[in-house]
Length: 389
Image 1 (cartoon, rainbow, N blue to C red):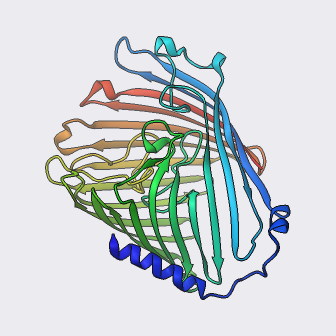
Image 2: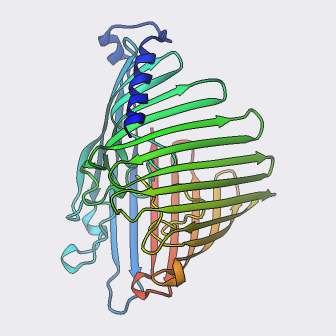
Image 3: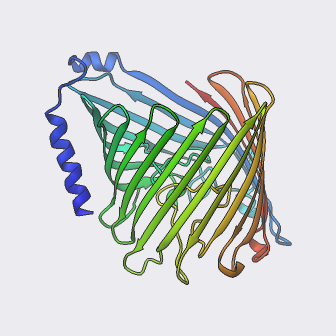
């Protein structure tokens, strides 16, 4: 991690030597010319366990985020974005009777509000440096926006365009909030004793190919090298991925993962296949990192994260009924070593409708059946209305 941190500091020094893209303006003018954006959401979720006697849980909430970002001033921009989620009691399960689904709320099942983003962005001729609470989207540090809000991170992040086709990213993440952060999603928590360092290169050819290579150092847990390649040409696309984990301090994160995916569009239908397999010693597994991971064989609920010697296959078909309406069906199978704890099939039925550029509706019905552990089987309905401005 020390080498990555040194690289980040070197990038910062180089950036100060760069020529600014825009002329400086006064701070007052930067505020007056600032931009407001955001999103309002109405979300509903219900989950029905297959276990006899277990209660169905449900919740409805309205939430969103409002972001203000100043115009550029002396190469800098400042931004803040409060996030909130407010329970609609009459349309949610009774907490006292253990019928409340807490996916939209804090660890106590209550509404929340917090400052999801608050950063300063420094621009130079071929990139930027951003410090503070921010969204990040790379293979294993990502927003994974599956409930009310995206994951956000307290980080120092450098993005540099080295050429027309080659981009470099380097950063240090110290804290994380959001649905994947554990505990109350409105609280920023430390992600590692000394933070998580990342270094990545992305290469996009002008024609059909793209490649990326990343190295992550989860200081007191593991280090991870990740590679993938993508190909797109007309109606056909394909991808390959490989990741290698090296365990630190008996974290049980170790081994390797490979994956392949392919899709083909025929008229209004898109057919896709995704496969992942991992190789791990007994009791060890792969990690999703900070967020939802980047494995090809991933569904609404299941991935190969935390599974030993995992094997996963997903097949799907999507129908584009109109330019605004799509329907898809995906079926997946996930197994761990000898099907000890996981022998799971998942079926996802997904609908998406865009009313216009600002308003869209999404619905997911997921059925999870774990033959190795009946208590892990359930069905879930999830609906979300999004208004972006």
